[in-house]
Structures are given as structure tokens and as C-alpha cells.
Length: 454
Image (cartoon, rainbow, N blue to C red; front, side, top):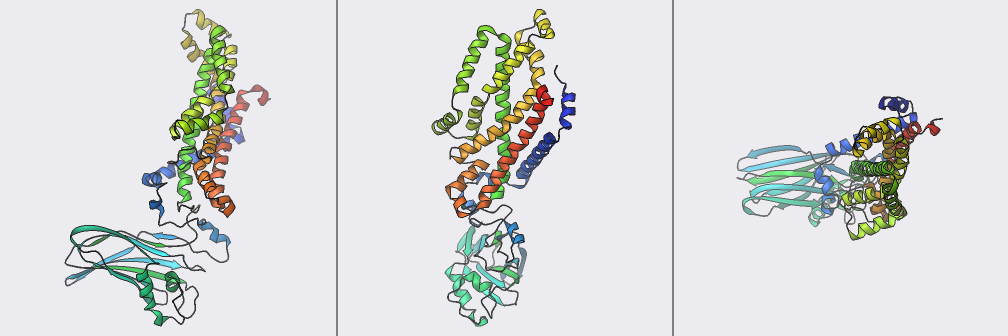
């Protein structure tokens, strides 16, 4: 006797393990929504473009580790919203951008970078200075932009390692009680004047662009203060923000797992029910073909197909469907052979209903609880198989899946170097996602299988 959908839900709602699985999946879908809303699609497309991550730190720890350390590690900061002002005095106009940094760390930053795009005509003058917490103002650079008779857009990055920055800082040696020759630019800027120790407090980086009788603007003004920690998850060797990869990996994992599970279960269900219902030679032929597919080593064949045909994520989903339906077909066949002997099925056949109608109207609906349980149990296998292929370097490199992140970590020796934040989060996400669907599958299996229920 089959259970109605209402009865199935009543029994499922009383299963705590199943409800925990549902809660985790809701959380995963929420993470997917956050990724789609908060992370620009361009960031997702530029995952493997090194130029897109040049302003990020390399292999930096997550920012939250500072809560557990007595000596605070400098945080990598990317400031994109400067305080802007503009004024005109006679023929000279000046545009000012100010970046405020509250520096409360115990060691010096690794570097600093100013990135900007200016639109102008003529030859504007760019000056960058810094006002320290002790009110000492240091000139960092003063340079003219390339001359242009027509309106042009000019993009540039000014690094603390530039010779012009170092020369300008040496001119301020009168403020310091020690020699600056052996110090980097960032050490000079953030040092106290009487001792070579960090001067904590508020720093203001001031950018002024002077022009004469011309329409000049600063676009995409950005100040980067280099540090050794960044973001919620940290960064990898390629400077990529791992939080972006982890968030985008969530909808990709759900897409792979659910697509493969639904596709393989539907194919296996229809195939097995048709074989069990038709019986005789049809059943024999179909099940022999099923045995051939079942006997094939799935993982080696997947590797061969990925190498020879392609490693597109959509091809991988298709390959996983091809090898995922055979077990479902065997079970659904045996169940169909029992259901087809029931009186209402025999009555439908006597009334002249076609085989397809009998299968889809009278047999398949009876297998829906089993179908849902099979889908839930099949999802983890699909996710872990894709992760395994990606870990071996056979996944789609254009998508930041959790398996691809682990592959990159293995390539750069993250485990040997102690870069745990590159390994643990994607591994935990794979385990949690698989566990959630296992919880739901086991809860459904308990409802469907009377022996387990007792």
C-alpha cells in the first residue's frame, strides 16, 4: 500500500534528521542567492584571470584570525570610496580624493598602491601625500600625466616600491631620528619619528590633480593598503578571494548534484518500470544492456571521456547521468513487477488502456516516495564525483567549483605550506552538502521501506 504525499510529509516532518537536512539545504540555497545578488557576474567570469586579482594579497589568512591573536596582523584594505572635493582658483582647478585609514596593527603593512583612471586634456599634475597621526605630512609623489591635445582616459597604478616615492620620502628625513636608506616606503610612512616602530592612529592619503583650463576628472579612484590577512576565507596563491569561489561553488554544486540526480533517477525509473511491466524478451534484453552499463568502471571511463571529448561542466553532468541510472533501473524494475499484478493495473489493461498510459498513470505515481528518496541519496555521489574529477585536473577550469579550488590548492602545495584556509572550507562544504542530502534520503528511505520503519 502506497502512501499519499500528505502522509509522507507527516511522517517526514517527525524525523529530526530529515528536518536538519532540509534546514542545511535551505541555507545552501540562501548562500546561492547571496552569491547571485552580491557578487557581480564579471567577477565569476574573471575567476581565472590573474589581472583581475592583482590588487589582492597573495595567500593571506582570513581576517577573523586577528580575534585570536595577541599581536594583530595588518589587514589588506581596498578603499574604493574616497572623500572627494574640487575647487577652482583663477585658471587652476584641483580635484582632491582623500582616503582615511585607521591603522591599529602591531607590524608594518606589506605595501600600498594607488590605482586611478583620469580623464583629461592637456598635462595635469598629480600629487599624492599622506598626513600621519602626528600631523607630519609626507610627500609621496608629484608627477605630470602624459600630454594630450584631445580628451583622453589614462589609467595608472602607483606603487610604494616606485623610485619616485622612495626619493620623495628621503627628502623628509629631517622629521626622523634614524636613517631611512634601508627602510621600505611603507616602513617610513608608518614609523614613529623617534623610533623605528609602528605609529598607530589615523592616516589620510591625499590625492590632488591640478589642471589649467581643462575638464579633468578622476575615475575609479582606489587605494590599496597591503596586508597579510583579507576577507572571510582569505586568498590563494593566485590572489583570488576564496570567499567568492566558495559562494559561487554553492549554486554550482547544487546544480551538478540535483541535475545529475534528477536526470539519472528519472531515466532509471522509466527504464526499469518499462522493463518490469513489459516482461519476457523485452525485459531480458533491457536488463542485459543494464548489466553491461553496470559492469563498466565509471570513474576510469569518466576520466577517459573528460580527456578525449572535453571537460565542460555540462558534459560532466551528462556523463554522470549516463552512469548513474543503472542501479535505479534494477530497483524500479522489481517494484514495477509487483505493482503490475495488482487489480487496478489489471483492470486498466482489460479496459484497453495503452501501456504508456498504464505506466505513467498507475505505476510511476506509486513510486514517487522512492523517487524522492533516490534523488536525495544520489546528489552527494554526483557532487563528490565532480569534485574528484576536478581535483584530478579533469574538471571545468572556467568554473570555481569546490573541487577546482581543492585542485588548485593541491597544485600549489597548500597542505605542505600550512595554507589550511585554502583546503578546509571547500572540503567542509562538500561534506556538509553531501550530509544534508544523505539525511533527507535516509529519512525518506525510512518512510518508504517498511522494514526500516519497524
